[in-house]
Structure formats: C-alpha cells, structure tokens
Image (cartoon, rainbow, N blue to C red):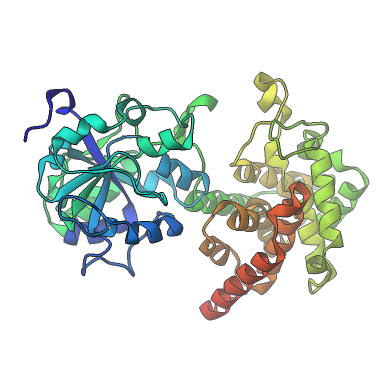
Length: 449
C-alpha cells in the first residue's frame, strides 16, 4: 500500500557513532540479535537499562519476534535520545553520523513501526503498513524543541521504525555529518572500503540533528563537549603551559606559595576574584560560587581519602585544584545578560583551561611539568567521578583519565568533596567504593601506571 500523500515527503533516521562506520561499510545495519552483529567492536551509545527492555519486548505484528530482532530508526530528525547522551558527556556530537532514509521503508514486509519509543516498561503500539502512520503524534515528532511538556509526549516524539534483521547501507538517501573535517574522515573510510555509499551532506535548517550553543551565540559549537573534546582542551592547556615563557615578576613563586595565598585570601587571583559573590541560577547551588568553593576545600581537607594521600605534596596539589575547580564559571561579565546569575554550564571545567594556563604561566614563576599537568587534570576532570555516579557518565572515562592509583585517589577525593557539598545524596559510599575498585582493577590490568 502506498504512503499517504501527506507523509510521502518525510524521512526517517538512524544515527551511529563514526567508530562504527568501518563495520557498517562491511555489513550494513544489523539488528542486535543478528548472528553477525559486531558486539565486541561496536561503539554503543545506548542506555544499558533500556537495552534489557528492548531485548525482551515482543513485537506483535509483522515479522514478530522482539525489538532486538530489528534495526531501529526514528521518524524525528532531532533525537531527544541523543540529547540525553550528549548531556552525560558520553559522546562528542561531531562523531555522530545521521543516515537518512525515505519513509517508503514502512511499506515493506520486513518493517514495523511504533507510536512511541520502545524503551519503556509498558510497550508502545506496533503498526504494520502505511495506514498506521495516521496514529502517530506528528506535532511532537516534527518539533525542534529540546524538551517536551511531559514524559508521554517525549516518548511519542521518539516513535520508531523497525527494520527486521538487516538494512543495507546503500538504501540511505544521504548521510549527514557535523562539518567538513568529519566529511573528509567519512570519505576516507568509504574510499578505503570501496563500497557504494550515499551522498555526504550537512544538516539543513528544517531537518536539524545536532544540539548546539545557539543561545550563547556559538552555533558551531556542541551544546556539551564530549570526552574527546575535553581531552583535547586538556592536552592543549598542558602544551601551552610547557611552552610558555614565565615572567620573573610573577606574584607567586611556586604552586605551594599560591596555595598559601589562597588559604589567606581566596580572591588573590584575578580568576578567583571573579567568583566572589557570584550567585548561581542552578537550584542545587545554595551558596555563591566562592562560598561553595571554600566549602569544597573544607570538605576535602576533612576526608579520609585526602589524609591517606601519600605525601604533603600530593595533598597540596589536590587542595590547590579544589580552590580552582570552578574558576571556569567566571568571569562575572559572562552573566550580565542573565542578571548576574551564573547559569548552568556543563562545560565550565574546560572553560577553566585557558585560565589555568594563565595562572600557571603568568601568576606562578616556577612549576614542574608533572605537577602542572596533574593540577590542570584535576581541575579539568573535577566533576568526572560525581557525574559517573550521579548522571550516567561512562565510567571508562575515569580509567582513560587516571594514569595510576594516585591520580585515581585524587579524582575520587576531589569528586567526593564537590558532590557532597551540593547534596549528600549524590555520593553513596557503597556505589563509590564499587566504582573505585572497578576502575583500579582496570588501571592495574592496563599496566602503564
């Protein structure tokens, strides 16, 4: 049966991480239950809990089976599932590829579709054939807003198209990529594979796919920086610190002298002075940013984890990082248009990187390379452990960041002080202990610490 004319010009979408492109070029899209699905080399960005539901959820029409017997696609171009993953800092948006298919897929014998996401405990309605398209909430599906009025509408917006078992790559009409750099990477892989591939294109205003900092006047930047981008900011800061010429008249001779000055006067640096009396629009921040910082320092110094660090030098470095961990929330001029209230800024840690370069090259006369890199790392990743425990950030990032047990201990100590200063409920000792043990085992197995 033909697609109704009012839906005939629509498209459906599947998004995938660029790391999966080599296997896609070999096999096309495969359902999770397909015997050739590359389970060990597949870069998944899906929620683990959701996958358990999909593995058991029965499809009551068409070829039948369970949802994991199908390749999933979305009717909507702007996926709230991707937004959730991006907000957790689990992917770099620039690495996400969108494959666009014609809506005529739903007229095939091996395709079913739903009126909501197949991610909930109660399954959505399943449809087989084009007449069911009129059952969908197209107002929500077509929306380019970043939120929905309630969870029911949110799931309706993520209605799915399910293709049984296998979907050839060449059936896509085009592939949408982030920018020219990613386009070149994709083209290089395609050329190497020597297989047919759809045209490579960029998103259009009426079919947006990516979440960018439009409201901040930065339409080319991702709403939240992912793990690869964060690592690049960190490495760049370390390189600039290493290569910089330090003025001999810098006010602080060493990081230790800076720490002593901060203990006496938190506003002794230009960067920390900008945090004095800076109020936050974030509801979890009961205090101004400077008072929150001082509480984090106080909590850190009271922790067993801090006391058990091997040396005074180690304790000094993590304490200095605690004093500086939120400098990226300044300067105050950033928030003039917001009535002086600091808005929620998931990228404030990388916003601190240029400030750390300034502090360790212009404010401090002498600092050893190893110390500089460690202090900068602690500031850059001060929220990592807390976000793994409380926000679903991927714990493998901790293993990637911590070179050895000492760095792991410092990250956990600073993360605990920061998280508990905001809410004691954000840090459960049992969960934190299990996470620490897993990360330490992975670091030791790696054997490069």
